[in-house]
Image 1 (cartoon, helix red, strand yellow):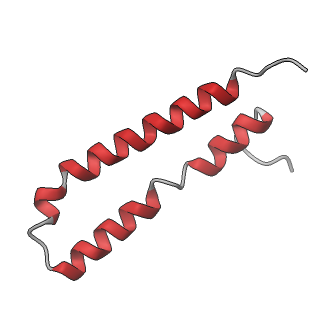
Image 2 (cartoon, rainbow, N blue to C red):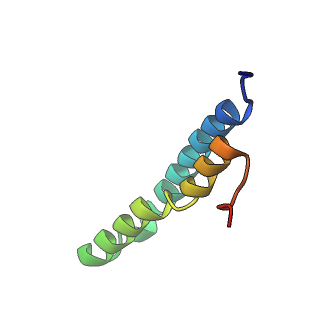
Length: 71
């Protein structure tokens, strides 16, 4: 078996995604902080889920080399 470059590159890309997403959410905290606490809860709950959406295709690519499922 030969080592694939996709896994280390994919892990690095996922870490960059997480760091960038955290920076984006943190930069919006002053605006979000002015909202009602229920609105804040909705914003941060959504932000906590949305970052994971690109992970499934990225993990699939890391394993198979394809972005989409084979039909």
